[in-house]
Length: 115
Length: 111
View 1 (cartoon, one colour):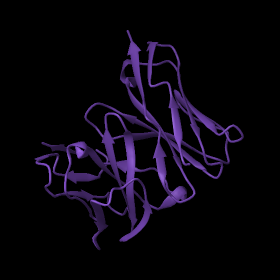
View 2 (cartoon, chains in turn red, cyan):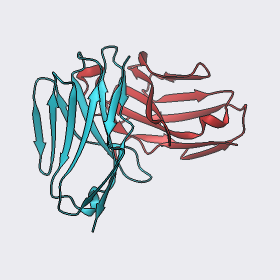
View 3 (cartoon, chains in turn orange, red):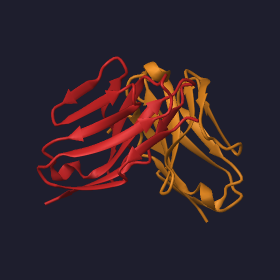
């Protein structure tokens, strides 16, 4: 158990819908990363927050957005869902930010299925 | 552009033999290179990492080597065991604080 929690574990929805994925980092970790993992694309970095502020952006679509709240939990919002958005979404937390960061601890993931 | 390439995509080795997975990266300014192991149904777990100020790091049966000039780093697993079967990912941090993962290597340990 990494100490990172993600809810829900599974999510099934229809195209065009909007969903919110939630992540609680390890106690004391200030940095949260979001990743998308699909079969053909591996692990894709989406976005990073550090202590409530956006720190780095990867290949995140405009239909996707995220935020980190004062209690450090984070939410990833996916809107206008398409079939291709079906994937595993992972959250990871780290004590610090950037290239000086120590290891990232990954949550168990949320499996999103768009029908 | 920013890129990490990982080879091979699949690797089968006999139990007890060694396994080597290689990655190359594009940005010479990258200075942190973690390796993750992902078992079925779980999130990736860090197994070893290396920073650019060292050339090699070892932790029991696992070692990582880094060649900054050639911009490549490798994971070495010795005396492989059945529980080493998993997907392994390399990664590199880039100058804009983005992390890019390789596409993964599925390692099969054969009995």
